[in-house]
Length: 226
Ligand code: TIU
Image (cartoon, rainbow, N blue to C red; front, side, top):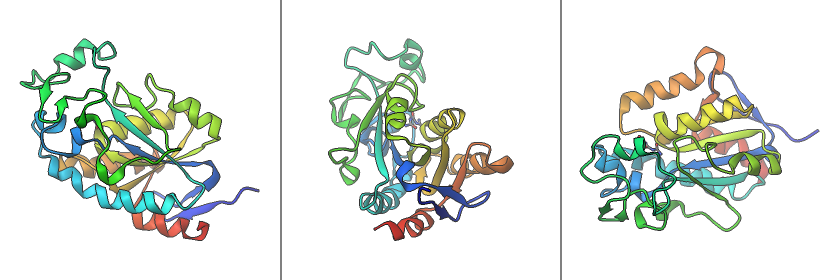
């Protein structure tokens, strides 16, 4: 029998096998979290997302001492925009939009500073980075192949934004049979009301999309693995 751990969570405790678990850090990129990027050009106060950084870093450091896998994602596009649907390019009628020049280089484009994962959460070698053109991490990526090869059954979701890329990813993962735990202080939204209701939607109806807990509860649960 593989070792199972329990995290105090809602709507009820989350049971998982560490060897079959991956921590997902979703889109913690300069473009969403720092001023002068896509998030700000969409009209948002990006400082609201920064409160997730320390809790994610705490979880990441704890997980790196265990057999739990780590996967990072980045949202964005090829420099020639061939993987960007025209509808996404047009959306919002932005003054500075995807592919345009901003203070952190071309907005949401691979290879530019805005696209990079923030310094505080830099991936280590052996932690795959999934480059994704959509909001959900499974769409047009090799995420499912990697999870399959690693025998992953459980996902711990962190990152931004709660109701957009985190929700899209959790919904896609849930339909594919993964058990998803979302850590409430490790996800953030530009809209406080969406943060609240986004988390409620995960755990409602008996955990229709998954479970919700906190960084503290998760770190407590994996302490025995070190
Ligand atoms: N706009 C917004 O809230 N989010 C995104 O566009 N992408 C992600 O959530 N990563």
